[in-house]
Length: 241
Ligand code: UDP
Image 1 (cartoon, rainbow, N blue to C red):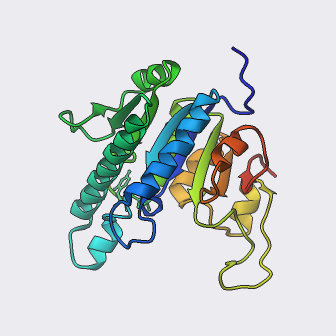
Image 2: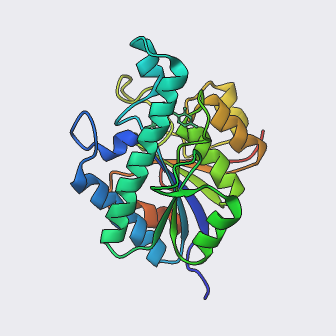
């Protein structure tokens, strides 16, 4: 079947906060349901989709460490939080008829599969949505790094980072009126101008593998499919120089 899409296989990174809606903790079923519908719509159009979901709606290691907890323990709690979110997304997707596999970077076999690259690719080829939980599986990293790593491993054509802002700006658009959104940036422009796109480790991984990134706002209904059809929504980071 010829795909009408500009991208065949993509990795979508959602922050944990994207699941909270207007709450300040946890998961809003309406919000996760809407995100699941967007993902299914994109998959039905022919995309192979891997998902990485953060854990910031529950725990972040750095925040727990600031409150006095051992950092490694805090990061392990953060990784477990990403597994909780992955299970919630799996449920929301399955309730809407999708086939899904959660694969975790830390072994937690009674609730999901271990992440095994070849198996992950096979799931995608068979039309299952893969949710890659627990980041890279070690402390002192984030799920941005997990998203970049998994995108490269599964041979994704594009890493999509959903945020609350509709792209990368030259200044904080909430604080600076008239801040300008970039439509395209190279990796070197992001580094040279000190722009915040992803954390440093994640960005370095993407850059070294020439993985294109698109930063966009998941708030508008239908946006995921429009991007996969090639619409230039948000900011694209790609190329050198
Ligand atoms: N985490 C980790 N290693 C990883 C990925 C995540 O230790 O490879 C921990 C870390 O404490 C992080 C937390 O899990 O803060 C939740 O992930 P993240 O902050 O990336 O979530 P998001 O901000 O995207 O919701």
